[in-house]
Amino acid sequence: MHTRTRPEEVLLQIDTLDVAYGKAQVVHGLSMQVRKGEFVVILGRNGAGKSSLLHAVSGLIPKQAVRVHFKGQDISSATPRHIVRQGLVQVLEGHRVFHHLSVQDNLLIGTYANSPGGDRSKLDAIYTMFPELAERKQQMASRLSGGQQQILAVAQGVIAEPALLILDEPSSGLAPLVIDRILGVASQLCSRGLSILLVEQLVDKALRHAHYAYLMETGRIAGAGFTDELRDSDLLQRVYLGGHGPTPAENA
Image (cartoon, rainbow, N blue to C red; front, side, top):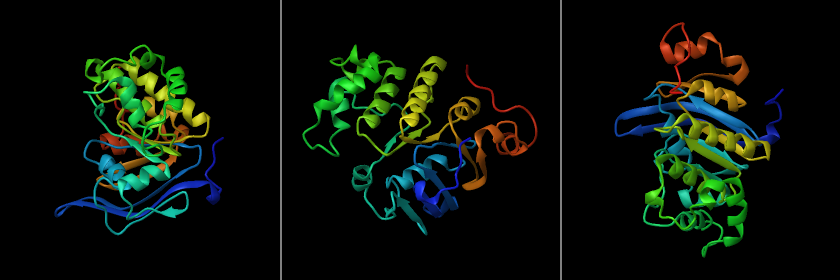
């Protein structure tokens, strides 16, 4: 059984994170961690502050009253570029790729943080992992389907060889088979030692793949635990439904 008992294995440690947009505070004193080789999911209803949490950790938006340590280094005030170079890479929600570039050029951009001119030596391994991209490597990203663009976005994150890959709602607007493909790849990567931090709305699918889950409610951690323990818990029902009942249905 997966455990969380060895502090030396902590990869990402967040302490008392606050995030505000103007006078509206959306994350309140939040603390959590991700350990090496762990697949962690953050669950919560829309507006719970999940994406704001991810963007703050990645340095994309300002944060207050916080200590963020990654691989033992304080990155609380680091720039997004420095954070990526440290090995923390976020795949943003919404199929964020460079539409005017080819699939291969999109992948090469993923290597720029460590190789300013791009590193073609990493392409073969990515094409083996994502054969659907190998078939379309010279195709413009704008001509890919939404699902293919999301797979490309994930591959762009993977080719950067991060220590922690953050996925912000990769299922958004996608067909069930594509969602299963993306989460399956994430599980495979985790089994090889890559840590995954996922924000996801499809509860059952997320709990099926992740080791550990945090439940967010109105910008705070409402609870946490191993996924097999949370799956049928009253806490999960309350966070999503405000009471008892089945977990939110998947679009599958």
